[in-house]
Length: 467
Image (cartoon, rainbow, N blue to C red):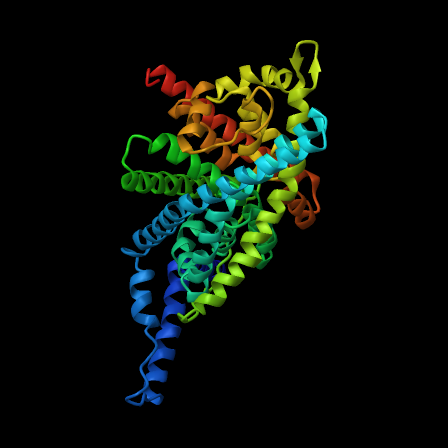
């Protein structure tokens, strides 16, 4: 009899455990948290009264729209598209003005070098290598950054970015990652190196490692110019000016969305393999909307972010320009060192829909993504000097003369989006993980992915005869 009762108790206990486990899910937790906030709101409404002059904060009404399951994502994509559109449309004229200014200044530098009878090699290194490489980075990067970062900061100060994190939270949970990864991913749009440090907000070591290994799949400030430039030159070339800007913005938004999809996919794979575990739950409290100090935000974003990034880019671009000029003008027999490297890389690069010059530019651009395009253009010229680009048609002609098609542009953008992190980011990854193994994984995972995706796309396009 006692044995029978014990069996019944054990059976009842197991049923109770199963029932408890069925309740232990995200929806139950969300319902509990929602009920707590609803109760808090009811108590607040019962005891707080508003004067006629005082109006309740419109946060709730706005959140019903911005965090809606129906409208949240479309609004988020529309905001991103508008920001990129304004960046592209607004950067064209300032970029052209800066390029003209640097071209005018180069004329006087050339006269100065002739006046002192400077040797050709010194003129080549300092003007054709260092000066032109630096001038290219400044004229191409400064205008977009001076527009993008202030707008991004205004959205952040207004309180919209936490709503983006809220919308993305469900997706990251389904991918087996922490909801806070959406915040670190958003920081990656500015700088992946800074985003790696921001992963400290994730308490779980497993989920923090997932965030570190996948942060590189969203474009940082150094990759925006590449995506924007190649989109406008090749993807939007057949459209009128107004439509061209819209198509360019659409292509760049598509690249960003693809990067987010890759982030979620790789996070899911890691959470099921090398970094198995159960996602940690957390409650994201949304701050109220605020009226940002517009002028103060614009000035601080321009000085703190735009010029900081520009300083870093110029610091790396200057020696890279010199190195590229030296490699292009130092010969072993009848071939320069630069062309020797390019010929070695070319067969492998061709299988990815690229060429040896493009792959070499990415390799030499390891210290900073900002210098990939300048190095590529320097390499395409027989003298190893960056050409004076009068307009975008001249720039496009340089690419076409070296066999570029829309497929080359597409795969270059994809490789730029997915390839290994820059040197600064890798250093930060090692500092945060204290592990050579995970630092190598952070380098290898995106590299293998970039090679695989570009290879597959190249083979499919050529197999279908689309090019």
